[in-house]
Amino acid sequence: MSFYNFSGEYIAYVDNSDTYTANAFLVFTVDNNNLVTALSGTIIYYLNGNLFDTDTNPELRLPGEIDNNDNILNSTNNVPYFSTNGLAFRSSFFGLVNFNFKNILGIDSSFLNDVQQTFPFTSESLSLPCLLCNTNILTKNGYIKINSLKNEDIIFSENKRFKIKKIINTEIKLLDKYMPFLLPKGFLNSTEDLYLSQGHAIKVENVFKLPEHLGLKRLSIEEFLELNENKYYHIELYCEEGENRRTNTLDANGVIVESYSSDEIPW
Image (cartoon, rainbow, N blue to C red; front, side, top):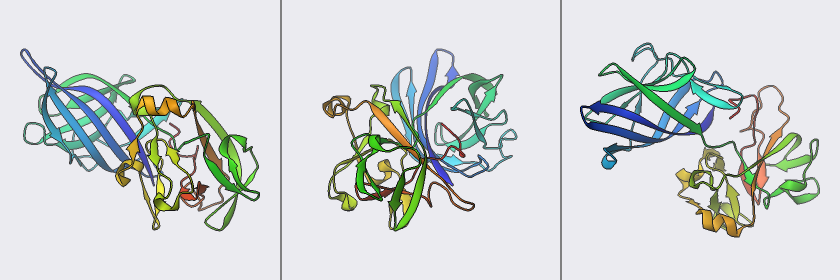
């Protein structure tokens, strides 16, 4: 089971000269079969560009409830997309309205079930589990900077020994939504300030929680530039049968976090 962040802008409804648009900021819980089993987050609605309504409790509909929705997320070349049958949920927009996000002719689209209209839909996944290069990872030789690690190096986490399968890095775009969250020194026994991407789950009392759910602060672009960092690093560990990125974790600055897995949806 994994968590994935999603943001999208779409046209929710058109009524003569009035256009209702929406900005969705959602977290999907996805199982190993790419089925979305839960969602949380916020959808902000606008009428002709002005704030109209905010839904903080969208409700996932069961597969088959809305126009044969199957609630499947897939990916091609690291780009996420909905299935042709779509992912359906209920929103408080105009009371209660069902939406079905679906893929039509290879283009992400939103489908408003009530009025039988289809509009262009753009979406972008925000994150892989990633850390800034100033992060210290616990290894057999003590804590080492993440950008000094290599494939096949041995790391330690939760009193277990793991071998690194792959380390990749990506440049960070200077957009607010790509800015890391700060887990400050001392919080959750962190030995130094820890900077994580949105969606990088942190283990707290045997439960994985996202930075945004722990109330952590996202850096502004100005604060990020002061760090003189420009890359996110992702560490994938070798996994035996029954293991995954939540069982094979990383000790980052003394905080236990999930590792990366290319076997799951690779966005």
